[in-house]
Length: 103
Image (cartoon, rainbow, N blue to C red; front, side, top):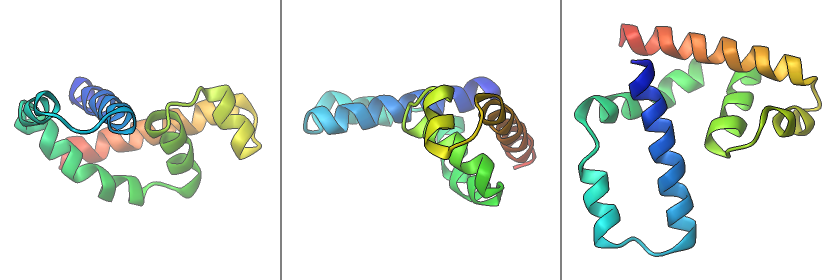
């Protein structure tokens, strides 16, 4: 599960960067179709599980993974200590893993 969720986040970031840089072409569409069904299921379940997290953990996860910010940048934006950002990230990931394993 951990590998699949990291792969899903990686592919989402990659697709978002491409979407901002160039129009969607046939190669990207083909890559989207190649996403394994397990990853698709995780991606479908992810928004609901993210909504179930505390706002603090959700904010750190979103800034770090969706927007690609470092923990230091995330901490600066949220006006918290870097250690706090790191612990909220770890807690949020742990909760997501448990929820996705049960799904």
